[in-house]
Image (cartoon, rainbow, N blue to C red; front, side):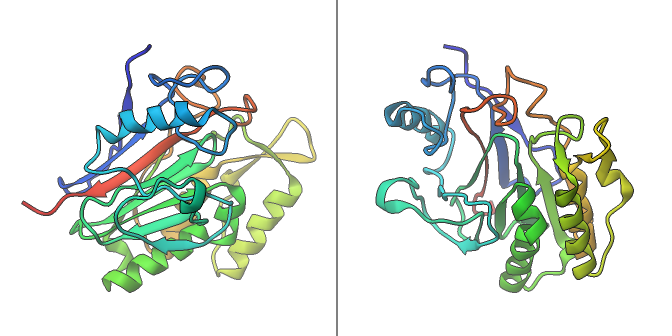
Length: 261
């Protein structure tokens, strides 16, 4: 078995805030989910998933609070842990906590994981942003709840975008571009032309999800945005990619904070 490896978030978060993304290295899942699949709804054997999650738990203060992501915009306030399977399913696409050592988690295999904290490290959030949720406002809802609960200004938030499919490999139809342009107009801002590059197919576009996410965050006043430079599609040895291979597993981006020293 290949040794478990993780990718630490590269961002100026407070020292007691911890965030990383897993890879497919390590674990017990067999092909096509090999090896460290953490997603419970991708078709993998449940026992392999549970074994993988037990390995992950050893790196954390407690088991994560897993949510069942449905490509929506719902944000839930949570604390403690939740296995996210059987009767413990909570359907949402983002979570928020002010409780130390509660581990927030987002599963992905091309979609973006967007992690947030504040400069004081007194709260955290994690959002799942595929194109539908991103377009419809999952990041806006997440930031709004964060600011409401913490009485913060947006420019005191820090965001990190985990691995996702890159513009080079994410071709979409004109209806996707049009939806984003309408959403931007509705929210009173614009998207730069570089968010959608013309495909070699004249009727289609190459969508830059990380750039769109950054521009949406900037429009909300979140100016400290990092990451977004790792492509899931182009690195099959490290990442699962739904567009490259279906069925496939899911890696996780996780964030928690410890009590201040």
